[in-house]
Length: 322
Image (cartoon, rainbow, N blue to C red; front, side, top):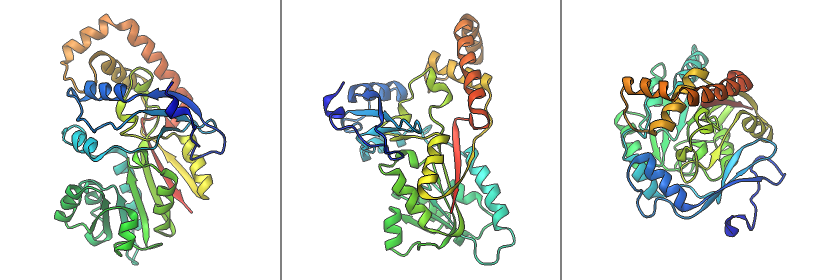
């Protein structure tokens, strides 16, 4: 056990009770796992030291210690892989449909802000709103240039700098969205508080993250759901505790979950890794040879889905309202 990491145990952001240590995550392990994932060694400063992973005993929220976000070198490196950025997410469609319904018939200028907007893919899908009603914030200059090219009002920086620049104002927005950003930030509770402060009375904050541990994590170590990439591992219980702490109403959503689909995905990961193309014939042949192993994975996935019910998907979407 790394004495430096455990000498002063951290506090859970969601509970006053002491957290429990899940595991140490030495820099050497993270670098090797990243090399295995991307099939090339990460640059020298991509991982800046050791971490440990801790679990809130009340909510099972897991968080990295120290809460040190990935460096600029780290994100420049992983951002250079074309498969790093996904296309349209399940939650994009879910939130777009709900915002369409909420904004229908409104004549007072329904406005949306997407925090961590990336290239503006989600905001571009909100074509039922005027382009000037769809606001974008991101730290990446490249992402903001893409948003500006689409005509989206855009700000490069943080929520604080957007407020300081007059790009947004407190209690000025009908909806704020942030997809797969919360798990990256060093102070998640404060980050959510900032976004809530931008909402008009009755407005909604929509946040999505991985639903941790994801289905395949019982079989395979996902380095991208650990530091320095992800600092927090969220689950439904953790989101409910966050809502109580912030005095919010909380609604949770998750995509459909199939034990068979999860089992096939996990079997592929443990057999070939995340980014290796394998033909259908070989996959089928390996599945026949490894049928005993696959059956064990399938049983575990069936238990997971049965326990989690409608919130068993690998992503979780939360709506917070005050």
